[in-house]
Length: 306
Picture 1 (cartoon, rainbow, N blue to C red):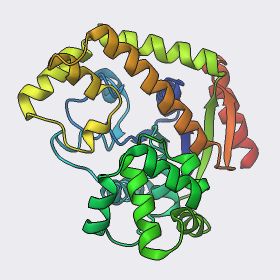
Picture 2: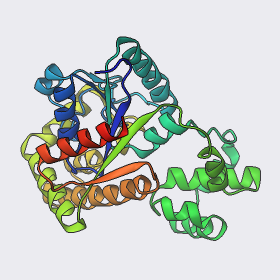
Picture 3: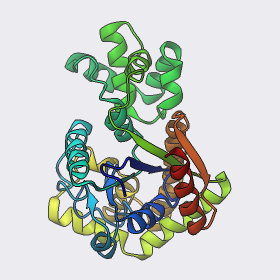
Picture 4: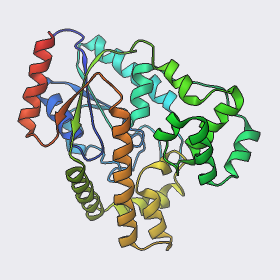
């Protein structure tokens, strides 16, 4: 392998098989894996975040997993700082990195840079947070339809931030983000994505949620509450944990929670793909192809580039 080989990005929606493909590539090439996952940074949140197993982490070195406790916050800026250091170290050692995970904002920040925007305004945020979600979303749709198409109507945090930026600057947040994305890539990589038919991906998601529950996800959540009291604001955004906390506190039945987790995970997959499809550099592969075929396809495309 050449010195300082280019990174390989493997992305795709949740349950698409990107982790298995990344593991196979890493083992085949003697590479290491850089996790781009905002929830796998939390210690103890293993089953619900589909974190690589202890055995997998012995076989292949993984970076940026288990960085903080789940009662701590973790910002995207901290991720970029740590990821930059991992990339620099791997380049110095001449080791290829396989970059994989499911957090689009982390990819964007790592490769295109952080959009800082104006600082927070407590008075504006307080006022906006007192308004119903429907009112916030309708207003954003009128002033910034591009952002409204990307932000889920129940995502209060991002709705409030988008409206806050507009009130502070008179410009929609999407215009700043457009400026942000015109720059050069901060790191060079070959990008590959796994594409699935909607119905097949939904079946995979439903099956994975079922397997996670059977593997002890509820017990894991109970243990986290016993050890840390509560999850931080950022950790609690991990799909499924709040639903299971509601089970443990008697607010919901397990059956109802499982169905809500399946729905939330399918919604997450759709949001991920909306982001990923915007990146023209991604070469899409059929996720349903056998793993050896996917490996060969990536290897052949890399040879052609060289």
